[in-house]
Structure formats: structure tokens, C-alpha cells
Length: 319
Ligand SMILES: Cc1cc2nc3c(=O)[nH]c(=O)nc-3n(C[C@H](O)[C@H](O)[C@H](O)COP(=O)(O)OP(=O)(O)OC[C@H]3O[C@@H](n4cnc5c(N)ncnc54)[C@H](O)[C@@H]3O)c2cc1C
Image (cartoon, rainbow, N blue to C red; front, side, top):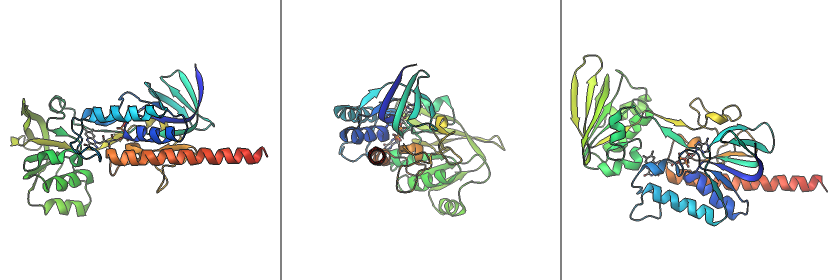
């Protein structure tokens, strides 16, 4: 097993990880970044990013992430292809194992492993991904303005996404599996008081329908009566939750019940000294590239302060 010592180890290559890398590299901390199984992160699965500041004509998600990688490398970040398979945060420097073989001893660790949106698992969702199927209303809703869409889900996120889309779209079909919603009473009231949202209770999606141009409709089935219906629409939004990619840290890092890492308010500090969490792995509210990048910057600055404080302590002890 190869062993190596690094000052700043960044786990994940989305907007949060690369932004942390840019800041840490420019502070002279020689960060090492592991990309994980999805180099570039979630944005590599989308064609058009129109809401990241600085791109007046929008940008392809993969191109944007290649630019971020180049920017991080320009200042000396070592970007490596590899998956962190286990960690030990009980020792210091923190131990991080990559691909089950390489051992890194890191003075600080920035976790930027993101989150994964949940889908229903229908083959037609895959078929029309990026062509009408989306798991992010704030990201993609604008593309469906003046059109009919559907939202699947029954929690607060589904209620929020439905009301957000109702402002842009002619009609929002909210597909709810049960005969009630899990969303808070206030959010349910908002949904029910929005004229262009129609709720389909006890209803499941059988298939997303489409043609060469993308989604054209959805076939739904009432799970009590068996009645089937086709809703004509162009956007199909999933709002059934996300899973943060944080399982490997759960023995050491405090998380909420769904696996989002808890950070101290206004900072990226976790419960373990020298371990910071940024981006979607610690954010179940905003989940945007720009907020991920913002907290990535915070993570690098927090790590830098932590390392400086340790240096000063060491200097004091050594006289
Ligand atoms: C289809 C789609 C379209 C979107 N469109 C937009 C948009 O238009 N605008 C917008 O602002 N946001 C958009 N988003 C949301 C945006 O992509 C996320 O908010 C953002 O990517 C989160 O960044 P992140 O750096 O926290 O994590 P992610 O982008 O999720 O990246 C996580 C990284 O961690 C790595 N990783 C995970 N586990 C490990 C491990 N064990 N070891 C090493 N690495 C690991 C992964 O390989 C990946 O590189 C979209 C999301 C999706 C899915």
C-alpha cells in the first residue's frame, strides 16, 4: 500500500471541489483532488447551464467543468482519477484510502462528494434525460416556460418545485403516489391554491413518452382504480429526493437522518477538526452549482486557517 502526505486533500470534482482546489492552490497549499467515479460531477450530465454567472450565452455542463479543472490545475492542483474507498478520521493526520490501495495522510480534508438525485427507475427516464426529464426545476424550469410539465413527488421539495414551475409554465401536473402529501401543511395549501397546478392522487408514472425532439407526454395509472391516462406535456420533473454521497464518512462525521453532512453555521467545519464539507454533500436546500462553488471557496479558506493555526501552535510548543 503506497503512503503519501498531503496538506489539503479534496474529495470530489464538482463545482465545490474544483473551487476549493483553485483557492487552496492559490494559497500555496498544493492540494490533491480525487475525481471519483464522475469526473466533473453532476453538471457533466447536462447540456445547458444558463444560471452560472459569467456565461452570458450559457455553457455546456461538461465544458464548464473542464474549464474549472484547467483553472484548478493552472495553480498547481494535482487532479487524480480515483475513488476514495474508506477513511479514518480518528487519527491525525487523517487517513484516506483511494481505490482500496493508496493511503493518503492528510492534514486537512475537504469533502465535496455531492449528492445524487433519485429517479423512478423507468427506462424512458434515461431515454429522455436532458430532453425533457430533469431532477431540478430551478435549473431547467426556464426551458419549459409557456409549456405544460409534470412534477413527481409529495414532499416539501415537490411542493416547492411545483409552485416554482407554476410561475413559468401553463400547467403543472403534480403526480402523487398516495392520497395525501408529505409536504408541510403550509406548502400543501400553497399548491392547492395555485390555479394551474393539478394534483393527480394515488397515481404513478408508467412511462415517459416522447419523440426525436424529446418528451411529449407521460402515461400515468391510478393505483386504486387501474385507470390509465396520457398527459400531454414537455417537461417531466422528479422531486422524490436526493442521496448525498457520504456513506464512507458516516462512522466519523455527524450527519442528518438523510446523510447530509452537518456543518457549523456560517462555516464548512464538521465535527472533526481539519475535515470540512462543501457543496451538495452538506446542502439539502439550495443544491446549485453556484452555491456549491461558494461553499467550496469557504472550505478552502477554512482549511487554510486551520493549517495556519496548527502551524502557530506547533511553533509555540517548540519555542
Ligand atoms: C441534470 C442536472 C442538471 C443541473 N443543472 C444545473 C444548472 O443548470 N445550474 C445549477 O446551478 N445547478 C445545476 N444542477 C445542480 C448542480 O449540478 C449541483 O448543485 C452541483 O454539481 C453540486 O456540486 P458539488 O461539487 O457539490 O457536487 P457534484 O457535482 O455532485 O460532484 C460530486 C463529485 O464527487 C465525486 N465523488 C463522489 N464520491 C466520491 C468518492 N468516494 N471519492 C472521490 N470522489 C467522489 C464525484 O465523482 C463528483 O465528481 C444540475 C444537476 C443535474 C443532475
